[in-house]
Length: 382
Length: 193
Ligand code: SF4
Ligand code: FES
Image 1 (cartoon, each protein chain N blue to C red):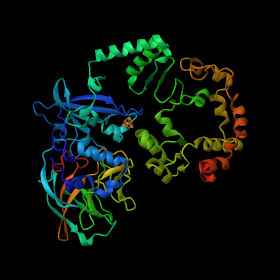
Image 2 (image 1 turned 60 degrees about the vertical axis):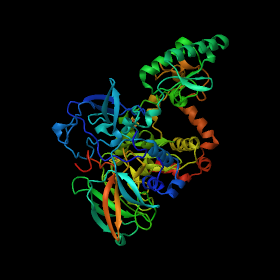
Image 3 (image 1 turned 90 degrees about the horizontal axis):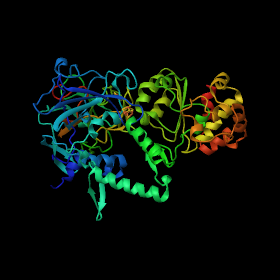
Image 4 (image 1 turned 90 degrees about the vertical axis):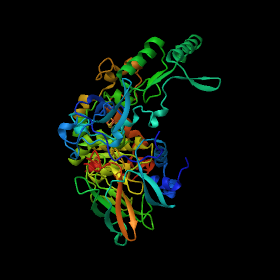
């Protein structure tokens, strides 16, 4: 092992023309940016040169802005077929969708750093299952660990029933994993005690939205870009869905999109929107509901809603209950019974309900959220 | 191996900054101290709070370039220069921050110098100095902002690396650029292009 200090590197090896090129995707967030891996063996000492015909990027160094630059964080050495290989992992400059022109966030931009290399902090990576024996965690084989897990599982199911076998999985572990784990839980264990990703039980995280007939993952990136007004609650996509912001929303803001942020912190994306005609409603954490309700109330009281669109796209009670609008495979009636359980009958009934709530009164909402009441009406009169 | 405190300061910033720093900086420090990246290094003298410390750096072959006089620097007024050559992306700035900084020189350890090119995708940071935050940015392309008191580590944004810091030396009133921490955007080697 070398020095324990981090000395920022001042050069990187360039991939030779015949380096393997593998396309892949970033696995850090759902934006799903495209990436390329350049891989070539240490053996033989091949290296690319700074002229376009000497490297796998086919560009001259120094490269232009937005060019095929490789930051030292994008380089690593890995074992491939038991031989050490150089790898460079960079956003794919050839993408025409998602991260157009090969943009990426810092997370995806540093993917190369998390690839296993015993010379780096990844050396502490768990490489086999561990079982505590005689008070000490010890590495064991997968077969041994799975045998034990199966025996314990069988015991629990036999003694306490299938619902005692709870499972939680995370949806972004790629389709293959998601499919296998769901099938295991729902078909083979048959437990109701199963859920995915961000929810405490197997339900949608946005039931009202779903029941009204919308898929929360419906909009395409182009839709985020094309919206005249975008209201973003409780998050700054510049920080959390970076490329969605910088490649799709930011250019829209430059073209006059009105972006309204509800959030307690003035983060970089919010500051940018504010400086370019957007609005920041600096509410207290957890007070979005009254503020959003108050904004909705001002809209419906003034009749500013898009009546034709609502008529065409928002479910009435029968449509929600029967799953209209979302197809039969992913409808609420398959997951839970909603007949007779909806709070409001349809849009008009919802409007009546909204107007009857004290927290939807703008002044009350503003008091709860500790904001200037003018802020929630400002974007609407503009 | 005994750890030279002056050296840690030279790399991680002054102790009082580390003391007040938020968790992200502590994490970075842990990272800095644990990431055993094997590098061929030479020892150079660098001013730290403990006097002259020997700092390992890849600076042996860098030109030693006179870039200005300490007495002529005014707080929060950056001056531009080129380093390590006058080729593409050598645009750099030196600034007296009025606040102690990692790698800072002068009696107040507040004079630092950085390359101007954003280490995300090459956006120009010229004219983006923010006196209130002692920062460069936001970058006009994708808004990355860099903290000049902490070796150019970014505050918010998309950059893949900290902003390359130009290593400085003070000789009497003369300030010399003598090396760099970090790879300059666009280049594959700071000294080759
Ligand atoms: S926005 Fe960043 S984290 Fe998300 S997929 Fe793209 S590169 Fe990865
Ligand atoms: S080039 Fe500066 S943030 Fe992208």
